[in-house]
Image (cartoon, rainbow, N blue to C red; front, side, top):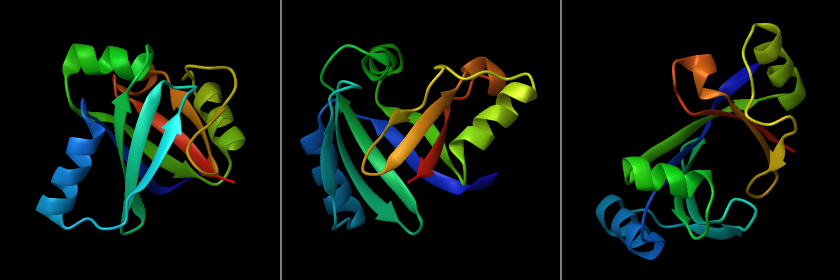
Length: 132
């Protein structure tokens, strides 16, 4: 079911400043920038080994903005890679868990994602991600 950690998402107030900090302080070179208008965010991502780190700046109302306002910058969610999002979702629900949406949504690039309800896994913001 789970193939590993797919990506880690961090919330930032100023994406340009955050990217510069990561580049200068940690030697990050290749950064891919994208907009996700459906989520109301701008993103920058880079690969660290097999795991993506995604910096997210909310630019419109939505869950990322709400969490940034409540908790400030830092860890937003952990996304676990899965071979089949449908099979992983079915397993969560069959075991008594829940998802935050009935249908998955398109993420960055070719990612298909769905969020596990925080009450399901001890309050953690966990996302399941299938690369198509």
